[in-house]
Image (tube, rainbow, N blue to C red; front, top):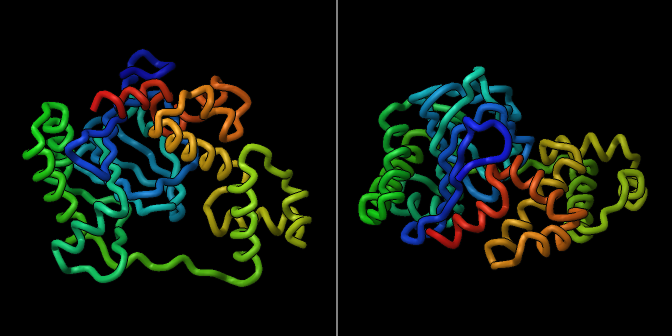
Length: 278
C-alpha cells in the first residue's frame, strides 16, 4: 500500500470487481509529484486533507478539503503538494463507458459528456466520493454502486455539457497527429525529434510547438505517458512487469518502476496486486 520515498506517503490504486469500469485511488502524498500526463477516462477527485496543486491547460488550481477536481479524458495535467504537509485524496477514475451509461440514465446530456468546471466546492459530493471508497473497501457492493452512481450523476447534472471535439487547426495539427501515430507505432524504438520532423516535412521546432498545442506536452513527455499507459494494459492482462517494461520501450524494470510510480501513483507491483486482490 505504500510508495517509495517519504515514509508519510501511502497509496492504494485498485479495482473493485463489483464496480466495473472504475479505478480507485486513495492516497496521501507529501513529496510525490505527478508529471504532466493524461487519462483515457475521467477523473473525479475529492481532496480530504492538505492542499493539492493541479496544473491544467488553463492554469494552476489549489484544491483543499471539500473540493472536487474534475478532469476530462485526454486533458494533460500535473499535480503536486500545495502545502508542506502534502495532500490526501480519494479519486474515482470512471471509464468513458461508465460516464456514458450514467449520462444516459439521467437523460439531460446529449453527445459525449464533458465536465465544464475543473474544480467545484461541494463538501457533500466530496464526502460521497470518500464513502464510495469506504464501501468498496468494506465489500459493500450495494452501497458502493449506489453512492458511485449518485455522485457521478450529481457531477454530470451540475457541471457537465457535451464534450467539445478537439479543434483541428491547419497543417500543424495534422503534423502533430501524424507524429503521435508514428510514436505509437514505434514506441519501443522511437525516432529523434529531428527524424520525426524530417519524415513529416517540417522543422523540429514547428513540430514541437504543434505537438504541445495539440496534446498539452512535448513529444518525449507524451511518449513516456503513452508507454506507462500501455504498460498498464499489459499488467492488467497479467504480463510480468519486467516483460511489460521491454515491450513498451523502457530499458529495464527499474526504468518502468520509476516512471510508472510517478504517473500512476503506485509502483507496478502494487498496481498488479490491486487488480488481483479486488
